[in-house]
Structures are given as C-alpha cells and as structure tokens.
Image (cartoon, rainbow, N blue to C red; front, side, top):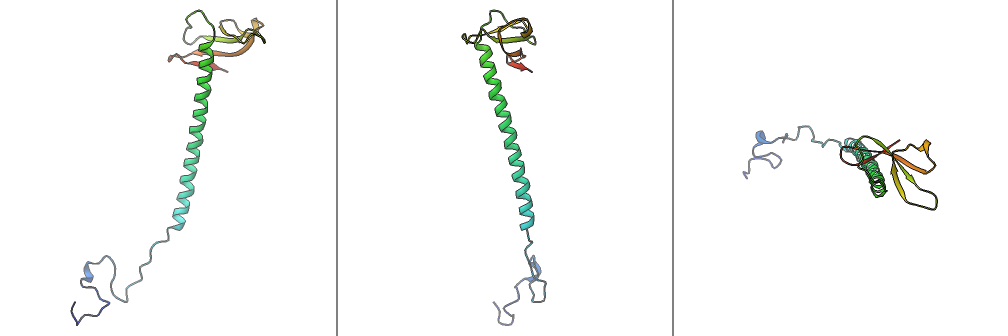
Length: 128
C-alpha cells in the first residue's frame, strides 16, 4: 500500500459495486421483514390448505376401501355387470351375514346397508 493514498480510499474504486468515498450515500440493506412475514403467512396458508385436501382425500380413500371390502366379502353367486346398481343387505338383526341383491329396498324386509355400482376398475362405488 502506498503512503500517499489515504486509508479510507479503495485501490480500484471504479471496479467496486458500491461507492467508496466518504460523500457517497450510505448503503442500507432493504427491510425484508414485511415481505418475509407476508410470504410466511401465504405459504403457511397454502400448506395448511393442501394438508387438509390430502387428509380429506385420504379419508375418502379409506371409506371407499372399507365399502369395497364389505361388498366383496358379502355373498353373491353371479358375476356383477359393470355400471348396474346392486343392493347390499343384512339378513336380520341376529344374522350378521351380508349379501348382494338385485332387489330394491322397497320390495323386501331385509336390513338395507347401501346401493353400489361396479366401475370399470372393478371397484364398488357407493350410490347415494
């Protein structure tokens, strides 16, 4: 370092990305606290919403699985036609056996469990 240059002057001031002399404006970092807090709230809202969507989708998947298990474990002695509606019944209060039938609930006295259709993936869909 040469003796004729003051200490507060850079060696190559023209190459610096900021001003190097005493009269230059002060360099102040941007205040990003507001930006950060807005983004945190927005991002947390996204994750909470997405989590709730996935949780609801999972609940529906489990419910669908349980209905499929129930229908496939029930008694039926024919090959169901895809897209047709079938009715799941319990024989009586004392008899917990389930069976699938073509007969609609208003035409019998069995305990009605639900109506179902077999879809193209061989999955039973509950008909509301």
